[in-house]
Every structure is written in structure tokens, then in C-alpha cells.
Image (cartoon, rainbow, N blue to C red):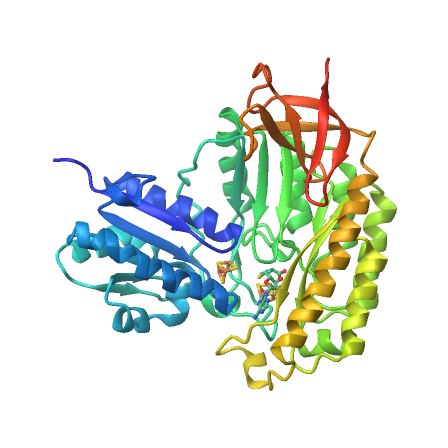
Amino acid sequence: MNKSKVYIETYGCQMNLSDSEIVASVLNSAGYGLTNDPAHADVILLNTCSVRDNAEQTINKRLIHLKQYQKKNNKLVVGVLGCMAERLQMQLIENKEIVSLVVGPDQYRSLPQLLNDAKNGIKGIAVELSKVETYEDITPLRTEGISAWISIMRGCNNFCSYCVVPYTRGRERSRTIESILMEIRALNKQNIKEITLLGQNVNSFKDPQTKQDFADLLEECAKEFPMMRIRYMTSHPKDMSDKLIEMMAKYNNICKHVHLPVQSGSNRILKKMHRVYSVEHYLGRIKKIKDLMPDCSLSTDIIAGFPTETEEDHQMTLDLLRQVQYDGAFMFKYSPREGTKAYEFDDDVPDDVKIRRLNEIINLQNSISAEKNQSEIGKTHTIIVEGPSKKNKYEWQGRTDTNKVTIFPNHNLTHKMGDLIKVKINRCTSATLFGEVLEG
Ligand code: SAH
Ligand code: SF4
Ligand code: F3S
């Protein structure tokens, strides 16, 4: 008999990408095959995101679209995994006829059993959150590439007032450093050149046995794998310790890029967001990073139009962007999420004002990003070759240590995936660098 084939589609953040690799591994061990084509799948799983309303609307539309596959194959099983599964639970089974499986982020071990039931027509749900599950004994089934995600912790305890993540992912828990190093040792033997340590708040990592912190973990990785590039995300400004910044500066193979979401430039709004730091604290962290690593690139997340945000608060956010000079930013319009603290606040910034403020933020940041990239022209960067660019198979791409996507000509395909090459930057856009390869 042919193996049942599973197609997994992933939405949301890197944690979800990493989780999909765990799901693939669990199902592979249970005898399932994987496919990249939903038309040939026996099982379609959507690993979903709930962070903003539009993320959920995308899934709702996708579920309607998937009905075409069910018409062609009435045995097709469709399941919803991830944060939306955790947030909506039974509602997904009750309201979406096509869905026969709902599995939250801490229940992926139960997938083989639930899929068996689903094939026999029994709809299933598993959404209990765990205080201990880290899947640290499961080796993720990764797609090929030179770069690997490693989940080092799960969950979040911060309860920022706007955010669903603490509800969809449960309490914070870290893996042991030993289990993380073991995973990297195996990757090191394959062609993996770069790892990204992942978590919603990686800098509050704490080894449950040795009590070592995130800076200790970075040091262990940097020392044991000197030829690997080490990245991490996301860090919270409250946990951005001097020790961590000093550790980044100490090791060449820890990439000089910090993603440090600020959300707003107004102390009053930060307080309402329950971010537990002030603009002054935040700027102090940025100063320390710039003092120790002048070439470090910086990125952030911003929310426009949080409840009660005034024009003055908004101007403070624009001022902060001008002051920090980020290389890039993810910028969002506030989206009220049921169950969060901020949902109880009056969503009093009209939508057209939210959109206007968001556009002002985006326009300003784009011009800053473009200017920062302009200053790269003439400089030389070492990049790891990742593969062909999206637009042209003879134009390949890699990333600088500072996480900037860099495109270079590769007409004779002389440069292979995983090669380290030196590129001199000769032009740019606000999002991408373009350069020529320097020989030798
Ligand atoms: N753990 C990370 C980010 C998780 S979500 C951190 O704390 O930095 C990624 C980003 O989505 C957040 O930084 C925030 O900017 C945005 N976000 C989260 N909830 C949101 C909401 N309800 N509306 C708009 N943006 C939101
Ligand atoms: Fe959400 Fe805040 Fe946790 Fe980030 S730190 S996941 S924004 S609650
Ligand atoms: Fe979305 Fe869940 Fe990640 S809500 S941003 S997929 S943790």
C-alpha cells in the first residue's frame, strides 16, 4: 500500500516554521510521506497564526479554497494546527465543516493517533497546553538549505496587553543547553552553515538544570562551532543584559544583528502595552549595542494606533525611529484580540487614522532603510551563498553577517550553496543590496 501523504502549509512566525519541521518529523516517524503538492495529499495541515485578525482571515479564506481538493478526494483530511487551533478550539470544528482535526502547539505528539481517527471519520481535537513540552527529543525534519532554525524555548510569560501569544503558546519553558548543543552537533556534520536560535523571548532563556542564561548558551555555541554563524530572535528589551551584548561583541561568529521590538516611542503607551520598559531604558540598550558593535544592524517591530494613542504619542514613535536609525522594521496596525487585556480598552483610534499613522511610519522607515543601505555601497561583506534569487536563476543571493539580503551574479554557477564569498556592494534598494563577487 502507498504511504499516506501529508501536505503542511505554514503561516505566522519562525516558531511556526520550526514547529512544522517537528510535525513533519512526528508524522514521518509514524509512516507518513510528505508532499509539496496539496492536490496529491491525503492530509492537508495548516499551521496557523492568530497574532492579528488578518492572519486569521487568511486562514479562513484558505479553508474555503481547500474545498476544491475535498471535492476531488472525499477522503481528504484537513487539519488546523498552531495558534489559531489553540485560540478557537472547538469553534473550528463546529463552524468549519471541512476541518476534522484541531491540534494546538503543545500536542503535536498526538497527531498520528488523531489522524488515524480522522481517516475513520472521527473528528479530533487536542489543545491542552503543557508546562514542560519542548519537543527536545524530536529531531526536526528540515527542508534542505544551509540554514537551520532551532527552537530553544517555547511560550511566553510577558502578557503584553495586545498579544495573544501567551494564550496560544502557554507558559515559557526552556530546553537544556546540552540538548541544544547535541542538535547543533548533528547539523554541523551536515551542510548547515548558519543557525538561528528561536523563541518568543530568547533572552529570558534559562537552562532548567544548570540555570545558565541566554548569554551562556550563545557563548557555548560560539565556542564549540567557530565555523558556524549564530543568529537569534526575538529578544525583549527588558532582558537585553550587558552580559548578552558583551557576549555578542566577544565572538566573531555571533552575527551582528539585533531584532529588538520597541512597539512605541511613547512611555505612556508602552505602559498601557505592559511592555515594562521605558523609552529611556530602550535607548540605553541601543547605545550599549552601538558602543560595543558600531556595525551591528538593528531592526524592530512597531504597532500603530494602539488604544488612546494621540498624535503626540505617534510623533514620539517617529522621533524614536529617527533617533535609532534601524536598518529595518516590521510595522503593524493595532488589531484588537479577544481575550487579551487591551481588548477591554476602547479601540478608539479610527481606522483611517491608524492607516495614516502606519503609512507615515512605513514611509519614514523605508527612507531610513534606504539611506542605511546607501552607506553600504563600496563596502565588502562576506556572505554565505543561499541559492538563486527569486527573480533570476543566474542572480544568486546570500546574507551578510548583519542579515542583509545581498544579490550577486552567478552566471556560470561557480558559487555553490554554502560557499563563503566576499562581495563588494555596488547598488541597493531599501530592502536589498547588490554586489560583485571579489575573487580569492
Ligand atoms: N515575541 C516577540 C513578538 C511576537 S509577535 C516580541 O515580543 O517581540 C510579533 C509582533 O507582532 C509584535 O512584536 C508586535 O509588534 C506585533 N503584534 C502582536 N500583537 C499585535 C496586535 N494585537 N496588533 C498588532 N500587532 C501585533
Ligand atoms: Fe507577545 Fe509580548 Fe510575549 Fe512578544 S513578549 S510574544 S509581544 S506577549
Ligand atoms: Fe502567530 Fe503564533 Fe507566531 S500567533 S506570530 S504563529 S506564536
